[in-house]
Length: 473
Image 1 (cartoon, rainbow, N blue to C red):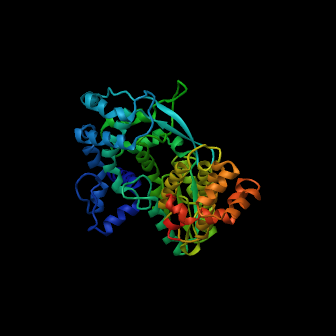
Image 2: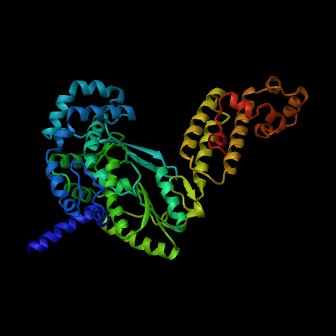
Image 3: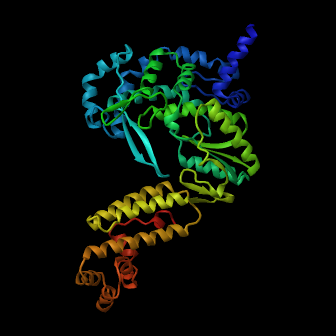
């Protein structure tokens, strides 16, 4: 009987950590981790007892969450992150003054479980892939509390998250996920099991999440507070809608909770020996053949839907060759070449079209400034691209033509256009030919004389950033 209970307990612990992670520590005792406890773990036996130790150490975690140093750091982080007001209308800029006056009351309310969680403000924003994404914006006070919880609770989870998990984690990024994916593809694993979770943040099962948290967190006050945040109503148009599932994006705690939920998927993939990269709810598994991918897809979908109680979007998921997969805005080709995915290029072009709309009535200098800002951000993110560079050069030329068109229309009358072109060194006869023999602004913008007058050097002088220049094409 005692043996059966011990086996059952060990089974639960292995389920939480994953056999591969335990074996790795048992095989390599020199590689140590702390698990947030401050004590080194050097053997599988110690790891198997980690849960009991952590539950004991987290019995009073609320005292550490409301520690002045932790709350001050959380307050500063919320202010730095900015964002919209919640249902109470308090602005982020007002948080510091509120906190300075009320931090003692806040600490007392949290410790005595008298803190009242406010409803979240429902906001819908367009998704890059189409449709809308629902955000739940907590009040700035709730964001402060969530951030304080995140800072302390992550110490107990972060050290044991999978090496193949890259989203919402300190020291990890989407670029690292892409670089690891390239390594798998160079090894011949060119078929990708592309898993798309349907409305993941809205579908998280509260009971499963709380059960998982309770196995490592001993402080019942914290568990009840987290459940209160999970069940906070959604406010829209003055009406509050109750929630029974999901952790809407918008709060500082949601990223950590999502990784805790999907760590079960990571453990399952590790124990099956799969090579994969996961960034939040975007997960790719790399295999050597389409047939192998189809087997993996079938079994993983069953695990996700039956065990994790989540829904796989079958219309977006599938087994595809790597050259047909969009992962974090990139597409990786056979052999490991990296290019910007087609959809990412189209989204960028849509932003350029919006900024350069000829009826905006915005000064040309402002248009240049706005474009340069998105060009800098775009090139910083897509700097890993090392193939299909011709597309980048073509986009640069297209942007300059859009700007020429915008600037010519600003001139308005034919004489004003001629005067503008003459001021840029264009011959008078060629300037008049531009305005007399062109049909429409777009047609006028592609004239050779216009291109010579508003050339690359001119655009550089007025501050336009270059895609090709920034990406060393």
